Amino acid sequence: MSGFIRRRPVSSLLLIPLIALLGWIWHERVALWAFPDIISAYTAKEYCSCRYVMNNDLEYCHGYVKQWLPASAFVDDPAGKRVTVSGMGRSNSAVWIGERQGCRLQP
Image 1 (cartoon, rainbow, N blue to C red):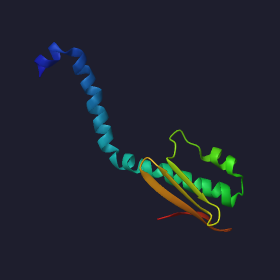
Image 2 (image 1 turned 90 degrees about the horizontal axis):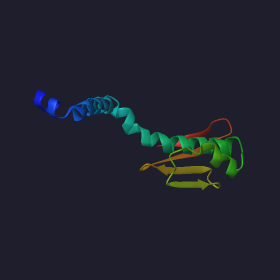
Image 3 (image 1 turned 120 degrees about the horizontal axis):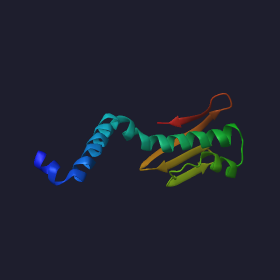
Image 4 (image 1 turned 180 degrees about the vertical axis):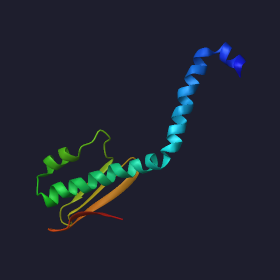
């Protein structure tokens, strides 16, 4: 190994952050696995609340929930007061329950 370090000092220095990054990814694997679900769930719930609890208009609520990671599919069902959002390979829905309960994510 010491021969490798002497022959390739730059490669050896880049290997250290790579190992640290892989260690961090392994340590945070549960949170990183949940991240794609959080994006679509947050967008569905917040849009539902903006639109059906606060009674804001369509354009305002789309701007309110806009994120730097775009949703691949967005379905607003005004008749059923249900919002379904897909993004990063995951899909979540939120539905308006009532005036006092607001919106709730659907399993």
